[in-house]
Image (cartoon, rainbow, N blue to C red; front, side, top):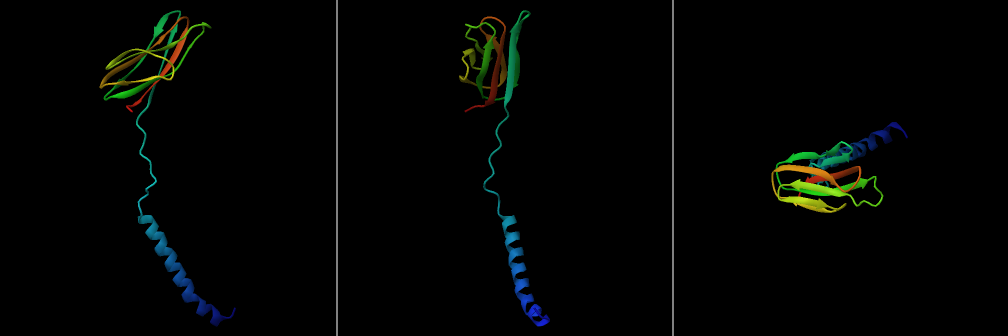
Length: 128
């Protein structure tokens, strides 16, 4: 390519660069619509029962929350362990995988229910 051909190609390169620059600046001004809302805060509670007694776990909540019994295990083979929950609007036993809604602000307390040495876990998250 000689000098004359380079000079003739120069305006088309400038035009291409200008179009690319315009597209880039336009794409930066478009808001990202694919953003997901941030999930709410999740609190995990773990409680145990051993030879020295029960070791509950608790957390304070400021609004209605969903409480789910995630896991409950016992070293006693035939035992059917579960989560015992005391929360605003609910006091009772939840089987593994079951949920309940606390009705408002207050304390959520988890203790393990069953025979033998126990370990249980619950999740406190935004109400569904």
